[in-house]
Length: 289
Image (cartoon, rainbow, N blue to C red; front, side, top):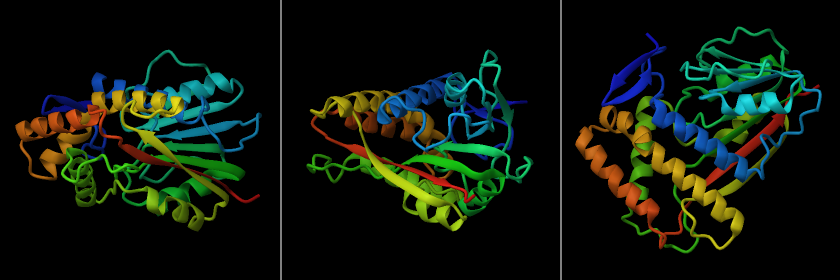
């Protein structure tokens, strides 16, 4: 059995309970919309790490619907691209140089050492209990000179003009998700330690950048407007999926309470008087030659 159903949402059954987001059509739509906002954030680029044009083997951890891996395989037809995930939700029709495996990245990796040229991680917040181990395995299985790149959001909503009221449901939403992550032992708050842990794993030439991801089209800057549009859409589509399992199973809320709370969060997210954004951190680094 590949799936289970809880509170009307479908979840993966492989390593049941290991991941809190649904894998149904609604949440898969959120993943694909989120991919579009990341492309907008990076000015259309799939990556920023200085990988060579002749990159051979690429690993996409937590590939989700496989949309990043498929796009990368199209861009690099001579590369072999592998996407791994707990859920078998990837399409059957993919480029010939792209394939997917059902796998748990928190377990021991079975690839040869010094195997991959590029390891890509995006949005694994709240799903890893031991980042040191994951980075150590990435280091082991990257070729000397290979790169790791990771993008993660901060759930701590920000506003440069103090338009997010102190009692905003957006603050409460972040607080509840962060607390739930602590209770699962899989922190949502990855950004503060990402760079240091990657460095401690042995990587060098580390670069990091923080991006502003608006929630909604409130900005006067055209690029931030575009980002805000896609971010609000993925937030809107994915909100209940982010919340239901964690808030019912870990925070003691009933399903009707979660649904009412999500309606309040959604209303705050759509309020154009509120100029909120979520910082997103990108880090890439290299395994020494």
